[in-house]
Each structure stands twice: as C-alpha cells, then as structure tokens.
Image (cartoon, rainbow, N blue to C red; front, side, top):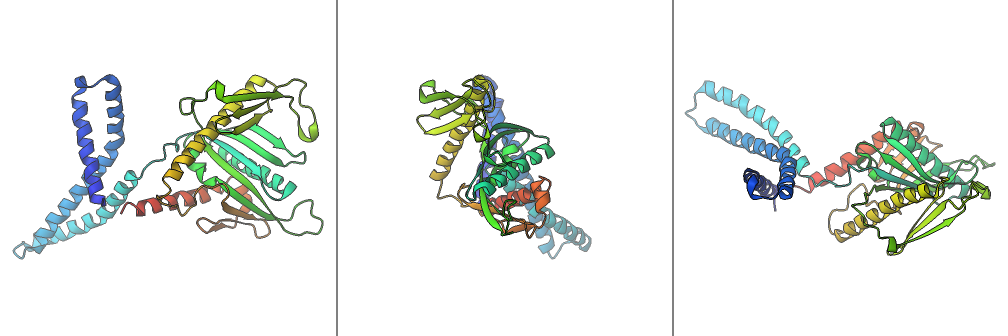
Length: 358
C-alpha cells in the first residue's frame, strides 16, 4: 500500500467515526467513549491530510492557469507567485502528515524502572555502574522527574553491583528507552598503580512501568521468601527478617528488595519491579514476533548490545549506533549533555521510520 492509499484509508475511517458519533443514541456508552477517543486521536492527522490534499489541488489549478496560453499576463504573474508559495508549503505538510502517521509506542508516556548492573571489569565495573546510576539521577532532577531508589547492592567502596530506581514524570520512557544496552568505560582506575587504561562495562535496562491492570500476577504464581537484610561486607542492616525475595514461577523472574526496614515496603517495591520485568518480557516477545519488521539503525534494544563508550583519557563519549561523539564526558555524566545524545537517537529513529512510510 502506497502513501496515498494509506492517507485515503485514514480519512475514510475518520469519516466513519464521525458518522458513528452522530448516532450517539444507537451505541452503548462504553463504545461511544471508545469511538470518541479514537476520533479525537485521529483529528489532527485527518486535518493535516485534508490540508495536504487542498494544497495539492490548489497547485494543480495554478498549473492549469499557467499552462493556458490565453491567460492574462497579470493573472499569470500572480499565479507564478502562488505556485511558488504552494510548492514551499507542500513538503512541510507532507512531513507533518508522515510524522503523525508514525505508529506510536504505547509505552512512551509511561514512567520507567531503571536497572543498572556492573558487567565485566570487577570493582571498576561496579564503580562505573554507580557513575551511570548517578548520571541518570541527575538527568531526572534536571527534567523535574521523581527519582526513587528501589534497590541498591553496594560493593562497600562506592561501587554498585546492581542499582534499581523508579523514575516518574512526563514522557520518561520515551526519553530513556534508547539507553538500554551495554555501556563501556575506558579509564585508569583509582586502584591502578601503573596508570594503565582499563576497559570495563555496565548494563543498563530501562523498562516501562507496568500497572496492575497491565500485568495480572496471581498469588499462586509467586514464591515469596523473607530473610535478614545485610549491607556491604555482611554488615547487618537490621535484626528482623525484612528482606524479601519474590520469584514469579511461570517466568522464573526473581526480584530481591532489602533497602527498607519494613517487609511490607520491600514487598511492594519488589512487586513494582516484578511487574515491570514481566511487562518488558511480554513486549520483547511481541517484538520478536514482528522480527520481520524494520531493524532500527539505533539498535535493537538488546541488552547484550554495546551501545556507548565513555573514554576518559580523550574526554569523549561515543554512541556507536549513530556514530555520534561528544567531547564533553564530564557534562554527559553530570546529566547536563545527555539530552544531546538522546535527541540525536530520537531523531534518527524518527527519520528511519519516516523513510519506511514512503
């Protein structure tokens, strides 16, 4: 189906919805509410398509006037100016229509669960994981988002083996979803006496937060174990069995939470993380079923995929998916320049999807 056929189907469906709304008394309230929402969602697209068709029609009329040898010279001069104006307007309208036609990721408006884990590189990898976690925390603060630490597994000297946070605010998942993958660091560790550059890695996962309605978790599918919380090096956090380990038996997903002194709070945090992981797994399954669809130039979102390198000696950050390098590593890690990378990734994704519409 070419673009014109797609546009024709959108307008036809919009007209059908309009007729359905005019027959309000003939549909039940739930169906009327659904139609109203779909109609509202389609309105900007339909209006843009109408504007595009109108501009094309006006341009065709102007071309007829200009092609007619009997056209008055003054009218011809006016028509020339009109043709130029319409030709300049047309690409803008076409781009807007294509943009509005892009399928939307239903998760974009959701809050997110951020998970950062140390990868290869031992203690240095854990220190880098802590750097990344703080980078996202600062980034969230810069955007006015709420950043709530859900779970921390510390090494005792400032590193994180694993860190999980809930981030809530406007379009959180849309902004952070391309951060999923392997982040690599090249630097001289503080513990390295010879001054050699080491390469370490940390894995980042950004999951759309799931509501209870999105993921039905049956009590019978859960195994919940409680144990005593302990801090770095085995230091006791408290003397009660407040830590919680939740196992979702059908998927094998395991979540542990021990940051709170209350077993109830740890369980609530654990369930929030568990729902997000189950929801993300289901999204991944659906994506796999659509494997024949496009493979984005900005990566597949596979967590084993190396997406970015932070090179301290050269002061640069390179995103390998779009071959973009910024020589401002400190500002990126401070959360200040991260938007430059995220904006570029978003633009590349949009450009790739727009190209597929034509």
